[in-house]
Image 1 (cartoon, rainbow, N blue to C red):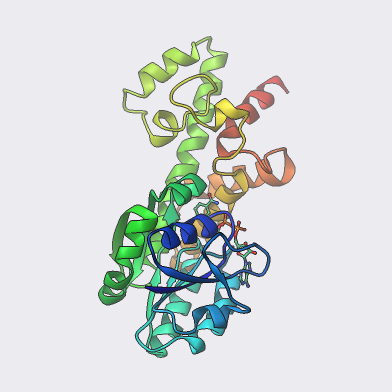
Image 2 (cartoon, rainbow, N blue to C red; image 1 turned 45 degrees about the vertical axis):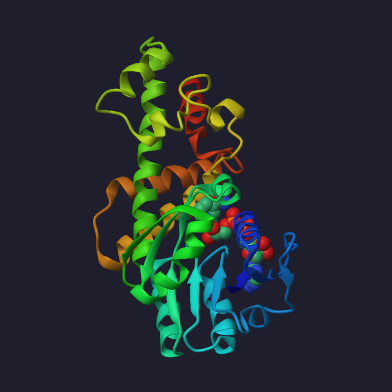
Amino acid sequence: MKIGFIGLGNMGAPMAANLVKAGHQVTGFDTAAPMPEGVTKAASAAEAAKGAEVVITMLPNGTILRAVADQVIPAMEKGAVLCDCSTVDVESARAVAEKAEAAGLGALDAPVSGGVGGASGGTLTFMVGGGEAAFATVKPLFDIMGQKAVHCGGAGAGQSAKICNNMILGATMIVTCEAFALADKLGLDRQKMFDVVSTSSGYSWSMNAYCPAPGVGPQSPSDNDYKPGFAAELMLKDLRLSQQAAEAVDADTPMGQMAQKLYETFVEAEDGLGKDFSAMLPRFEKRHRG
Ligand code: NAD
C-alpha cells in the first residue's frame, strides 16, 4: 500500500518503520524529526499525502492536527483515508473527520495505547472512530502496528474511549500510590500489601501490571528510578482532554477533575516533569515527611 506518514517522533517513527518492514511504501514528513530507515522524505505534508491510499498522522495535539489536515486533505485523492493516531480533543477529531468526508475521503480517529514500547514492538492497541469502510481499509495496517484494533463507533469515538480509559488510569494510579504511602505509615510491608491487593478487590492495572512501588510486582518504571514509561506530563495532557470533553457535554467527573489537579501540581509546581506518572508514590512519601 502507498502510505503517507506525518509526524515521525517517538511514536510515529517506529510505527512507520514497522509498515516499511511489512513491505509498504511509506513517504514521511516531519518538521523536525529525521526519517527512519526505508521511509522516503517528503518536502511537505501535502507532498507526503499525494497519491497515498492512507495518510497517517501522529502529532502532538489537536491544533497541530487541524493545521496539518488543512494541508493534506486537498492533496489527497478521493476515496483515500486520513487516519489520525495522535491523542487529541474529541472536537478536533470530529472537525477533521467532517472536513475529510466533505472532500470525499474516509476519516478515522485512531489513538493508541501501549507507548513507545508498543509502537516499536508492533503491539499497540488502536481505539478507532469513523466509518466501516475506512476502518476496513486501514485494518491491515493496524494489524502490523498493533495487536488489537477496536472499532468504537463514529467520528470521535476512538478519542472518547482513549480519554475515558486514561481518566480511569490517572485516578487509579493516584489512589494506588496514596494507599501505598498510607500502608507505609501503618507499618504494613509493601510486598504484603501487593500480595493482598493484587489478588483482592482493589486490584487494577496500576497495581498489578505497573506497580508504583520499587521492587514489588512486575518490572515497571518504579524499578528504573521512575524514568518514563508514560511521563506525568503526558498523563496530565490526557486528563485535561478528558475534563475538556466532560465540560463540553456537561458530564460530572469529580475524580477525573481531582486527578487533573494533582498531576498539574506535580508537573508544574513540584518535581514531576520528566518523571513517570507512577512517581506519585515518592511524591506522597515526601509530603508525609514534610
Ligand atoms: P513526539 O513529540 O515525539 O512526536 C510528534 C512529532 O510531530 C514530532 O517529531 C514533531 O516534530 C512532529 N510535528 C509537530 N508539528 C508538525 C507539523 N506541523 N508537521 C509535521 N510534523 C510535525 O510525540 P509522541 O510521543 O510521538 O506522541 C505523538 C502522539 O501520540 C501524541 O498525541 C501523544 O499524546 C500520543 N501518544 C503518545 C504516547 C507515548 O508514550 N509517547 C502514548 C500514546 C499516545
